[in-house]
Image (cartoon, rainbow, N blue to C red; front, side, top):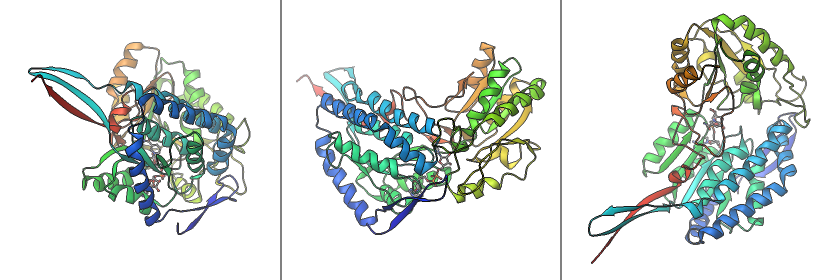
Length: 452
Ligand code: NAD
């Protein structure tokens, strides 16, 4: 351990905690410990591994209020969101606790004997987490990785390490053996990069910016290291004239301003069919003005502050485009900003093309289905999106036409632990969650057993 780091409460800029950062030596020690623990963790019977994960879920559930408060203080998350995030940890752990007993291989008909496949764990998995959803993004990686028999080294983001550190302690309390789940707060360039270069780390799960993701993918090539990437997004909320416009407009603020827009799935582009544009904007404005930006400790809070001064400054650079209307935000200390709706000149505008990662949305119109699909696909990203229509044929055609990993029809929900999540194009590589995530934490081993 070399340096200390002050964790800031973004709602008031006070120091929430001071923590120790792992240096290179401490990182190597933790990786060695995880590699040693792998030898026994992989041999624990599937039923017992499942039981331990369920116990981990129970201990997290018993600390729901504490973890939620920690996230509100560290990340400025609205209380309702923070409570949901703890539940997401519990539910994802519970879901994958059933996996060890269902990690089936195959028996394949061959001449001269039998052929069976096994899903073997990889070893130590390195999970690198961004600051926007510290608990959910961590658990989407570590629950499936542990269930498949791997051990984990996890690096939280510099800004938001507190809940991850606490989850590491709670894992031990639940009886997860020492060395199986290790949380290493520290710098990306030191701890995160060491996960990439260390030969005993057999896989990286990286969630974060597309630029860092590319460098991690390049680094992993050196050892043909397995990699899952969950990167940026610029997702479309496509609203057709035949939709339930009241519902589409009422839920559009939450679809982009939730977590202050710091969401890789934020629907930060709204595409409205021209014939209902005025009516949509009228209803949308009502929803934006009602969106409560306030002390995240309040149960009524819809949106808290941005995570940091740096993020606040980056988001302000998008405000040189025409503003249609804004909501409101507290003044004073903290990185507060009102929800803001832009009307860019055209689809070349920066706010239309780049991920803002703040409470800013851009609105443009389209004539017909073909134009809506073309506009949605005019992006290097392809992570999420929504389609609002009452026409089931159109919903199907547009769902198949939009190049993105996760779509919702007449809904803005993006991530469910039961179903696969991940991006097309530069939004990522591979899928997390759902029944297939185990495949990305295992290697298929084929064994032929001769009749002779
Ligand atoms: P970031 O890329 O700066 O950092 C992400 C993590 O990587 C942090 O833990 C950081 O310390 C670490 N890191 C930085 N440099 C590294 C290096 N050279 N080697 C190893 N690790 C390194 O991203 P951020 O600013 O924390 O998060 C915002 C970004 O994350 C946005 O672009 C957003 O879209 C993306 N994101 C994607 C998803 C998804 O599921 N697709 C989810 C959340 C966030």
